[in-house]
Image (cartoon, rainbow, N blue to C red; front, side, top):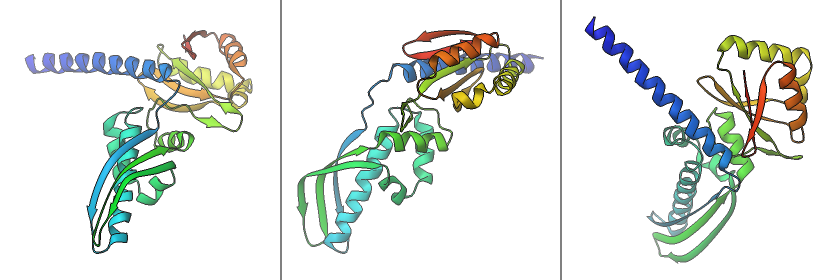
Amino acid sequence: MLRLKRYFTDIKKASVLYALCSVLFVCGFAANASPNMSHTVSVKTEAASASAARTAAHIQARRAAFENVLVRYAAWPEIERLSAETRDSDILNLVGTMSIADERQAATAYSATITITLDRAASARLLAEHNISNRLEIQDDRGLRTNVVFNASGGLRNWMDLVRDLNEAGAWSDLDVRISSIWGPRISATIRPGRRAAFVTSMRSAGWTVQEREGVLWASK
């Protein structure tokens, strides 16, 4: 009996902590308007040749930028896992610009201070493709998508009813709802640019209320 009581106490504590983390994470997502996608690192490598040392140093710098930039906008365990799964060539595709200073090269050694700026849209797409909750806004050709948060406090049934209603009204595809993360009863997503008013109208028609907080539309029922 005592063991069972401790079990439910631990579950309750975990639920409270999980909810708190969700609130803090989503608030951070809303507040972020101009992300810093750059990272500067000093590298020093040795290899069989000067060119090999230079290549190794650049790879090292790009991965350092990859991890240090993305961890500003997503949880470290997720970024650590993503880094382990991502090839050097894929990281190279995320690089927008790279500048080199204090470059020194010897027969088998290379050192430099390298500043790398990641492409914001490409980085956001990579995080979304791996279902990693993040605070980077996804940008398409028509502009920044609008961040929305669904608070399905009534449980899975409320959420499923909403998805059904929006689909039947054709609003789901019109808004182009893209889910980015699910934290307990809260579902973070983005909608098509310029559809804020349509989103509010659709949600109210489905019996949900909508409030705007720091540029993010929060829907609840």
